Amino acid sequence: MHNSKQFAFIFDMDGVLVDNMRLHARSWVELFRDYGLEGLDPERYLRETAGMKGLDVLRHFLDPDITPEDAGHLTELKDFLYRVMYRKEICPVEGLESFLDRAESLHIKLGVGTGAGARNIDYTLEIPGLRNRFQAVVGSHQVQHGKPHPDIFLRVAELLGTDPSRCIVFEDALPGIEAANAAGMKSIALATTNPAEIMQACTGVLSVIDDFTTLTPDEVLDKLCIAQPSDS
View 1 (spheres, rainbow, N blue to C red):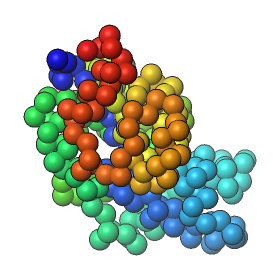
View 2 (cartoon, rainbow, N blue to C red; view 1 turned 135 degrees about the horizontal axis):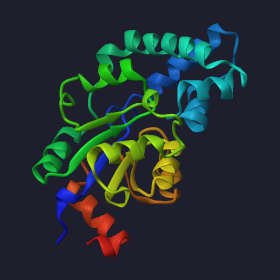
View 3 (cartoon, one colour; view 1 turned 90 degrees about the horizontal axis):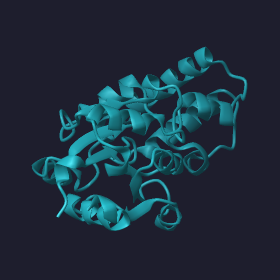
């Protein structure tokens, strides 16, 4: 029997707490089109850069030499477009609220580690069902390196006072899975952004789910303790 108080669940935000990655992708595509980049489709954005900082997305697709200042301006434009266009469409992933209720009843610590910036974090975590759920929230603006570097997840673990080996990351994007591995954390992958077979093939993934209706916090802890017997 494991002591659930010793564990933490760290959630990526976009594509995990809310199934909105394709909405972000469409906003990026519209921004790039306005700046003369034609032929980029949302699926390519999701495949190559989902979960990355805006600076890294812009350097990947638009200009490898773009300055952080210019990238920050363009990212703000994209985020404003996203918030205006999709405000009425954002809601928690199916089953999430019940999943969080059960995790809270087990005294599992809950945090968010996201590549999003401050305004998008506030915008999302204030929607009904997510408000005041998490004891620690870290965004890309609060660390030096975004995903796939481990900085975001390690900072959340530090704020929650939990050893990385006892943290389980919930992710939908390949850079996020890579970041979790680099942080020494196992993952539960959501197939909201990438096909399940792609996520299943990733190192460190304990399970792949479509939403939170098919897995309980108790089962997540069991999977981690099976993967790490010494922690049981």
